[in-house]
Length: 198
Image (cartoon, rainbow, N blue to C red; front, top):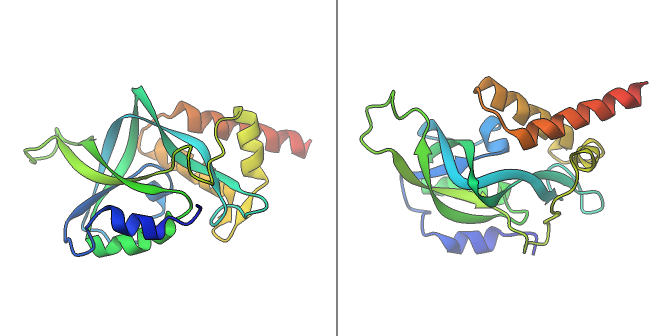
């Protein structure tokens, strides 16, 4: 099943809620096309972001899927992202945006800026979109070079797949964050582009 909109609409009764936190770890960090009430940097423990999910609807096509991020369980990892406090009605838009194999899950995030904040709580329950190995768009692991090559050769209705990679890497750097997986694929992509120019 590629389109998960109907399933997600039934997973959490939040449509009428006025206060829900959303955790973004990929394009939601740099492409915010929805209204929000508040935005805060956050971390999700026990998960790592990986370019292991296919994109048939945004950054690729059914015939030539792009590669976008999903989360995989990794007890030793901590994934940086951006959290947005939104109204429940916003999830109808988000469910459409994240429909290609992603399911909503409740997770507990911690605030990056908690020391500067006068909030009493250090953590917060949030909704995250995650696509596991059982969804029809899952591509799984490959070498950094192979993933970079697929990204460079893919384009969809939302634009070239490389834009997704490069904009995310730039956004993470601007926020002072390191991500070995993302930066290694970015480096491999630039190396392939350099070699193709020679």
